Image (tube, rainbow, N blue to C red):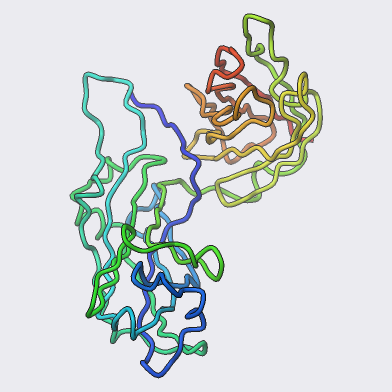
Length: 329
């Protein structure tokens, strides 16, 4: 039997593509890149789209529109861009008598698309622009996966490979330095398998009340996980992710934080998050429940958020399954 453990991750998935400028065009990023030209080429992500919809894999896919930002003289002329993909089975198998792990490791990634540089055109910014895309059915075919292998929270991981006439650039040999300063340009993207939700559901003002016991330690209990018997505002971060701001561990702390939870194919999953009130780092203070609660998109009046509190075991606490009841106001 398998249980879903949701990693904090972010969603969205895509792949990039982009290409070379003419020799007489000077990169606007030439000066900041002095001394790092041999570490990689950089690509600006302009628009991403696509998802892995478990209720409609046939029409699922991913795409990224982007443009090349590079120094042709130093890095060479881009000949083509390849998209490689591998698969992470992130569903924990609790039945050790069966082998349910469908992971396709990074070293076994396969090429699903090769786009020649000639397919891209110069945009208004003066860079070569293009879109790389693939459908989930063709990706599954390349990896040898069946629909039954794709489960909630599992992920397709897409790696971009840029081939120039001088060198090949990948996630392993390209520095991300400039992407943090000038633009978003990673060489790796991922798409997590989800079910469609409704951003208008499970949002608004809710009264929250802890209905479970408290985490305990040899020196006493930790009190409620959050401010109790209060009204919180639940907002949609994305189609499947929700957030609410609340005081953590009010018995000992007074800081507020945005807590996240995800609507994943019928289950409410709290992704791993850090705690403000802690004895060391607070890392991994909150985590997914052993047995998450369920939800019904047609009825968001009352629901339970179940999670593992003090999953890290900090402060000598014994991790506990905490239940918070949300009642719409």
